[in-house]
Length: 410
Image (cartoon, rainbow, N blue to C red):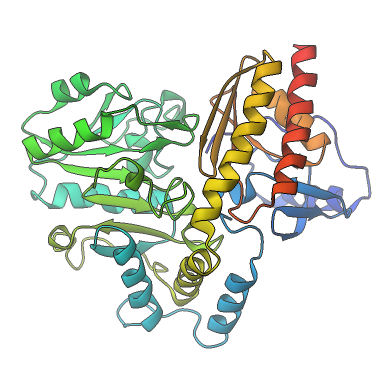
């Protein structure tokens, strides 16, 4: 996830938000740049702060709350589960974890699931799987510039963005970086020690950029020709966000491994790695684990999320909703030179600007609109599948005003 500068205004002395910030300043590690806003509750695509101000949220949970804030089916499932069983170790079987794995398998390529707590942990599992398949003889993995795979040392080493490596070296050995979309560069990087390719079908933190035509198909051919594992990072684009269950289903290319997190449990912490059944055998007992992975609460939320999406027809609704965003944002681009490009893939939306995006985020906050900026100049929206047309128009109005105003100052 990219960081952005917080607004310059400060909450009033003695206010509820000021008291919370003072507590954070005293007791919480300052590893995040936080906005001076204390959120206290949410519903759908709206949240409220400690002073009672209402905000329209176009990036709920930074993509984790795909079904909006506090969706009733998820809340009910978690409440019922927490009253029965909160946590047991993975030395025991639980019905929810097995059912969750079945639902994911049937909606993907029919493999098996390893459960964890986050996207970066899912990538650690995938990295180990690539290495374990050949007992470490083919340990190298090719990744791509502009990609983002997480913050643990394996995942950050796989992330081909130097800004995330600063002060953390040396990086974990075994990762080679290719330009995104360059098949010839990938071919040149493959050697006898290469075991896998890790790629986002749609760059998320990289600016909401879909794979170029033929790129994923080319990676599949290279992987097959050299007996490599093709791993798709679907932490951001998976679980229905793009209007299909998984991003790879847009491209007609089936990977060997998928990593998932963010919206997997509709806001509850959860991650997963899905892999072909024959490959799953390589992640043998004792080689990897996650203490809380697949716990009953996460599993209950994950199951409820799948059922809610299907019962409410939200995959089809995404396609309709995305078109409203596309029409509104393209209209903005046609009249505002500061908007360079608009990219809409379901509920993954990137508005590329010719100006500083952080300034736009600050202006949006003043208009009680929550958005995100990545790569310095891309406004990234990750709206809830349940957002209404009225909320889309309201959000696009506010965003458009913020961009026009920021451009006038630039």
